[in-house]
Image: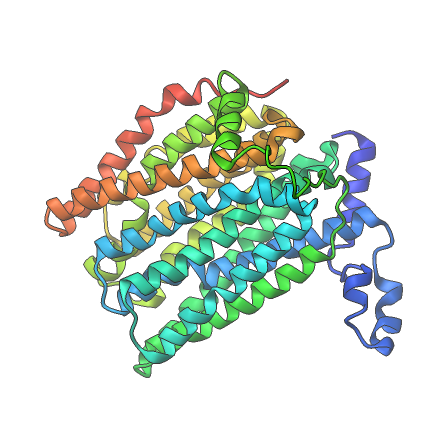
Length: 453
């Protein structure tokens, strides 16, 4: 980063503790409050946008921590088994990936990435309402949970490609590594805070034999956080608006045609190698990923407090590691950071074979947080580096579909092995071992990943 870029980044960072001074949000405040806080608000448009984006990441991540991450545990509390939990952690993602294929067409019709993204996040907030109702009611079928989770993932994934294209035009290139490292760090602290708060609520409610009501409380908190995130997104500018398509244009490319075009543009390109590796690694990771929760809560008999401690460690490790990883990424470049993270995630699943001691698993999760933080930061940076702006929405849409197929495939294969092996402790350990072996098998794809530079 140049000295000028570093100075502007620091100036923007200092504005984050204050609310964004956008007309949309100022209009929501009474005049006396506006008059009191106006002198404190950041003045530059870029600074306001960076503040809003960072605050959005925090609110969104709290939602993930106390909402999304507890959906599998909610299914277990309702009496569903580990294979059903695996379905709940994978099939809705596939539904979301299929639905988000309409994103390029929707953005073209609306003529705005920002508007489509805000609409999707609002729907995602509303998707928690049935989960809250079922927590209060005390029961829900698997199909009901699959439907609600599918709406949640569809809304989230449909907004993702538009957000990536939108934010790519908003954050200057010279600031991206430092900004996204800081933004991701705030996000990980948000996930950690949300997950810890959710675990504490469930632990207290479990003592009063009201565990399902505890899930209702944390899902309500998640919905409110997503609404806050939506307001923050709505406060940001849109620097480059896509050209709206004409409603009468019957010759507009269909969704399958757009998908084929996106896949064709990736063939032999840096973005193609990146997507191939990311999807292959997702298959390997999700071979075991959905089954850590039932392993801890069912097989090892962990309390919600202990479960929260083990899982939250990974989120905390990500938050603590990201500043250092941002500096490392500046030296190694996104590709070097991706390769370091890709190698580090290989032994993580197999490490669960060594011991079921809580403090040992906390250590494993701390290492996992650092490794996955490096991989995720590198992946985010490479999408801006390896994918041209004009192709970004379409490429990310195709990537999301491939990622979902890999996720469902990995979870299904892992579930089949778990069920065939008897769903006991030995079966879980077999699934974890195979997951690490699959991560070794995708290393040749990692070597093909490169940037445009």
